[in-house]
Picture 1 (tube, rainbow, N blue to C red):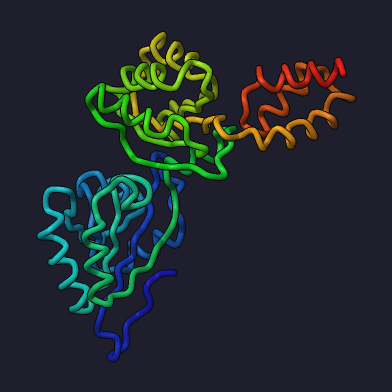
Picture 2: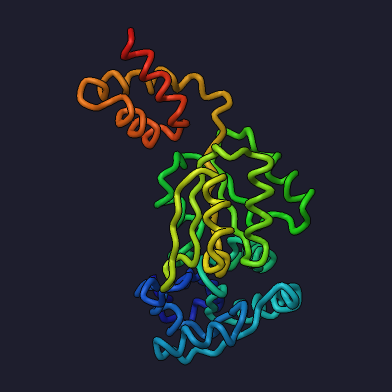
Length: 288
């Protein structure tokens, strides 16, 4: 909810952590707009970038720069202003603050000072892609951007290559090709992935395919190498043998009404397991 008008007994302000759009300005919530208009100050990662958002909605609240390079100093400034009774909103360049953005030192200091923190939820690129990935993402891990250097990046992929969780990460335009090739070398071409590029923007791309197909798709089109990227990699099938019972029960219901190929495709989509493996199971069941 928006900040309430303070009475004489309320001498400490509140810190509102406000999510902003990741591309489409219409994705901002009415609550976020109300908060940004009513707080005394907005701490922004890039004041010039955030000024465009505020201008679009005729918000005149004063901006304070808060980013990686001044985080220690500005955290003290913000805490002092909160203790003095000012309400402050924290925003990032896009999406939900502190998800791969600066700010945790400020939040730690605010909590330690006994100041109230109020989340104002909204857009987040990783969650947006997970929701449309078409992969099994009931459990997932997120680690921001992979390392820049090749060997470290390959080690990064190897670390969770056998995980039972899906994995979501960000990547930059100038590293996307090399990063996908490293992933291909470590994870193999059959691993299912979903790529989100320029989510919610004019030239948005959402591509679900194997890792080998994604590498080919991105390398073949220079336009697909531009913008901001989110990648979801499907979980490993290691230690998933217990799910075979579920797949078999599903195929028993699908095979009487669908072909082996169609039933396998549907079961693969619902379980997140490889279609080829399920196809072989369906063939054996049909022969039996």
